[in-house]
Amino acid sequence: MASFSRIAIVGGGPGGLMLARLLLMRGMNAAVFERDTHADERPQGGSLDLHADTGQRAMRVAELETQFSAEARPEHQGDRLYDQHGTLLFDRDGEGDDRPEIDRTALRRILLDSLPPDLVRWDSRIESIKPLASGGHEVAGRGFVEQFDIVVGADGAWSNVRPLVSDAAPSYGGVTLVELGFDTQRHPAVDALTGSGKMFAVGDNRALIAQRNGLGHIRGYAGVRMPEDASRYLAQSSVEDVRAIMLEAFAAWSPELTHLIEVGDVIGIRPMYALPIGHHWPNQPRLTLLGDAAHLMSPFSGEGVNLALADAVDLAEALSSGEGWPAIERYEAIMVERSAPAAEGAAAGLNAAFSPAGVDSVLAHYLERVAVSGPENRQVS
Image (cartoon, rainbow, N blue to C red):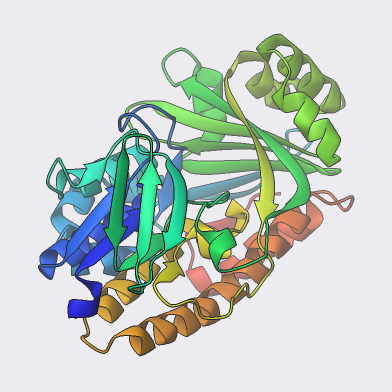
């Protein structure tokens, strides 16, 4: 344990914060370096569901289950599926799965509140990480230079730590989403369309998504399969041009559905990138990764945050085991074994939702769930 007496966690997302919480509970010294100047600087995204054996287990191990239950929304687990003409093909009421929803912002707040205020170093963008003769690393940024026994890259898709262990880089998956926001009181039509949880409308390499969040908000996405250069152009366009481009892309769709694009607040452009399935790297002593930095995938498997939280549990156990680096090597092997099937599912989900076949493959997926999930699932047309 002495060899890991000082631990740097680069990235203050759910995975990095969970790791910090678990190490603190074990009496270990960790510092989280986060580039944001404060917790609310950037939108954290919409709602997510925590799975029993990964995300929920992590909250229990971190002794944060009560806080999670207070924020979770089991009633918002419903699914609806429409075709591009606005025909409702599938409708499932909420509370059908043991995967309660929680807003990403609420999850991050729970984790932050569980840590001493000075443990997270805000406004601390990492500029260099250099190996030391002693075996550790020097971590430097604007106004700070510190030495650590181990550096954990929990810094997401475009990780600064990953290039120190791997040549792999995220590749574009061919789909870009425009993220939209709605207030349910101002947009009752969107509220009614969304139902008790999440709605998909799918057709011809396009999809519209709306997902119920807490506090009377809905998060939406208008997604189109497009080349990477078109995605970059979209990201550089004005809000008015983004809306016009997406309305043109969905011109053949039902007005009931394109209403989402017309009235939603444009929050951001989200191109879908992913690391290679089964991404792994030659072991690099004193450096490791967790979460998206290690296994970035599209959100179409619902596994990203759950895997990051599970990684944090396993890495905390390895760091506190007293076994030294062999325990970290075992953690990395477990992480790769766990994340590879999820990455395969995410890639398949993305390609199913954005295909020339339209809604058929997505409907087949929902109908498969009817057979295993009980009578609350139903086909409506």
